[in-house]
Image (tube, rainbow, N blue to C red; front, side, top):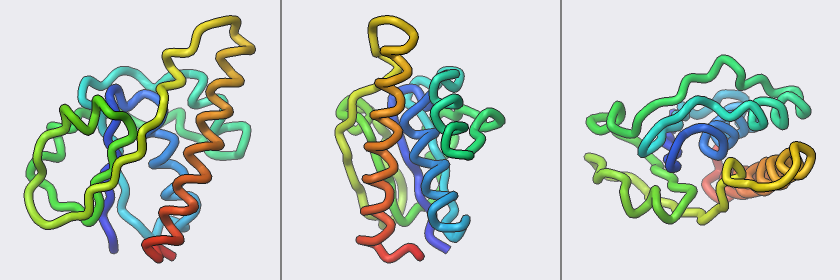
Length: 139
C-alpha cells in the first residue's frame, strides 16, 4: 500500500480536503495523512464544502508535520509555497510533489463569498487529486 503525506501551512483546510479526496477516490487503497507546519483547528467551511459532496471530515484531527518526521512515505505533497520551504527533510526515498494553491482560509468578504472561495478550492483540489491518482496509477 502506498503511503502519502500531504503538507500545508495549517492543516486546517486544503490538506484535509486533499486527504479526504485521496481516501475517497481510491476507496482507501492508499494510506494517506495530512499535516501542517503550524497546525490549527479544521476550518468549518472546509467541513461544510466537503459535506456538500457527502464526505465528512468533521472528525478529522489536525496534526503537526513533526509527528511524521521518522515515518517513511512514497509521496510527500506540499500544497503551498511556504509549506514547501518550511517542511522538514523526511527520511528515505520518496517522490516529492508540489502544488502551489491559495489558502481559502485567507478569503475576505461576506460569508457567502468565503464559502464560494472554499468551493472553488475544493473543486481545484479534487481535480488535482484525480489527476495525481491517474498519473501514479493508485487505483
